[in-house]
Amino acid sequence: MKILILGSGGREHAIAKKLLEDNPYINLYFYPGNGGTSLIGKNIGNNYSISDLAFFSKKNNIDTTIVGSEFFLMQKIVDLFNFYKLNIIGPKYLSAKLEGDRIFAKSFMKKYGICTPKYEIFNSYNDAISFVKKNKKFPLVIKTNGLAYGKGVIITHNESDSNNELKNIMIEQKFGKSGNKIIIEEYLEGKEVSIISIFNRKKIIPFLSSRDYKKVEENDMGLNTGGMGSIVPNPYMNNFLFNDFKNNILEPTLDGLITEKLEFFGFLYFGLMIYKNKMYLLEYNTRMGDPEAQSLFPLMKNNFLNILKSCFYGNDISIKWKNCSSCCVVLSSKGYPKKYKKGNIIKGLKYLKEPFYIAGAEKLNEKWITSGGRVLNIVGISNNIENSRKIAYKKVKKIQFDNIYYRKDIGLI
Ligand code: GLY
Image (cartoon, rainbow, N blue to C red):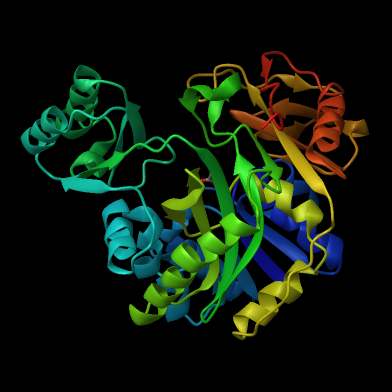
């Protein structure tokens, strides 16, 4: 069996390692992949368009393609693969808009009574400014409409702060065209939760809850990143909140997906907030989270390929999890998410115990060197978060490279 995985991060390495652990006979291909994926499969090249990927899949008899990164979804890769009758796991463009078009997503949430923070939509800078002046409630959340790769969400704390950001986004186009239309949303101060699920066109099957640490500095300070760590399960979730999520977010989402004919086979990620003991949906993503996937896979008991096969045929499946917790610490290059140096030699990787995943690192002449902002994802597994955290940080201590940076508070909830 041949599987092509699209993306270049720790998440894609985690998907691949889990697939191989359960099914050592499969052949894996990656586009573009990273230094870790090149050791367990074949990185097929660079500068491929989605048509090149379809051509590659057809020519090489790829059985299925798993879309890791959202980057490919908004380019309509699933529509193209479907046209050529190539198997692919992910939503078509219309459904991927639940992630790639925030106004579309918010309108969907409103239409189906999904519990989400209050919001207003603006395509005029002057109207947005007047709203901020009249509203007078801070903080506020300003969101660009289109994908801005984790950067299009800004929290402002007063009127002049908000006006400046609105000018940057709407007039100076800091995020390009994705800022032509924006959302201003009420800010909810609470605990963030991620729930990744798999959607089999009929049913949404949730995975364990997780928490992503998005900010670069400890105590959730500093710039937003792609994620500096994750834990599973999220310690703030309980049965009451899960039922609230199920009744007021998951089920109305399912109703909306079916009614609007947005069914697909793939992952649906709910970005949630617990606010005053109630669950709110902040955003959908239409793929797995990174680095949540890196904490989830080591706890999954099922053969992941069997989950994918069952969902492909629209069958229900019960996903079994180890009765453990996991904690993933992201080792990054100092300076990330802004400028950082590449090419630093990584020491200690050879003796590092599993699980760990490569993100921005490659092997050159038998030496591992850094090649990205997020370099390695190191995971600890144990009976509770505290012990998983201890194990993860003990493993972290075994790795050295110049300009290493990581948060010390992952798992301290
Ligand atoms: N961890 C958040 C994301 O993958 O978007």
